[in-house]
Length: 219
Ligand code: MD3
Ligand code: FE
Image (cartoon, rainbow, N blue to C red; front, top):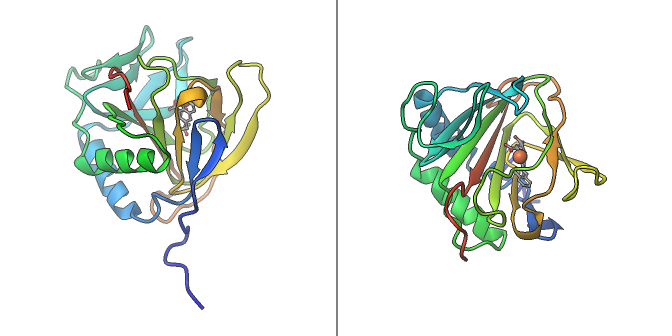
C-alpha cells in the first residue's frame, strides 16, 4: 500500500473552460516555501484595507509585490509603482514566487508568462468578493495564476456577461487556477468565508494572483 505524501495529493490538470485550468493541490506540495515567501512580502507590505469602485471598504485586505501593485483608495483604483499610502515602491517579487508562477502557468499550457505583479488577498471569516471581472490589466488575454492558501472557500464563476449563469466549486489549500485566453474576462467571485482553522493559516484564507499588469503577452 502506498501512503499519500501530502494531505492534498496534486491532481492531474483539469480544463474547466476554454483557457482555464485547475491544478488541484499543486501548491500544497511546497506550502512551507509559499508561506515563507509570502511572509517575507508581508513584512515589507502588510495587508491593508482597500475600497470598491463605489467607495465602500472591501472585506478583503490586500498586499502586493512586483514592479506594479493594485491599490484602491476612496477615490481611485488601479495599478501603481508604489503604495499610494506610504509612497514606497511595492516590494519586489521573491524569486521563488515568480519561478513557481512560471512553472504552474506552463503546466496549464501557457508559455512565456512574465508576471509583473502578485496581488495578495487576505480573507477572514465573512470576507467575500462580489461578482466582477478583472479589467485593469493591459493585456486582456494574458493568463492569471491564482494560488489559494489556508481555509477553503467557495469560488463562483460565470461567463463573459455579468448576467450569465454561474457555477461554483470549492478552492482548497494548495489549489492553483490558471485563467487566460477565452476565459480571461469571465465574471467571478468568492462567497463569504466560513469559519474554520487551518494548520498553517489559522482562521484566514490567502489568495495570490500573479498577473501581467502592463506587459503584453506574446507566447
Ligand atoms: C478568472 N480573487 O483578486 S482568484 C481577484 O480568491 C480575485 O481572491 C479571487 O478575483 C480570490 O481579482 C479569485 C481566481 C481568479 C482570479 C482572477 C481571475 C479567477 C479569475 C481573472 C479572470 C478570470
Ligand atoms: Fe478577480
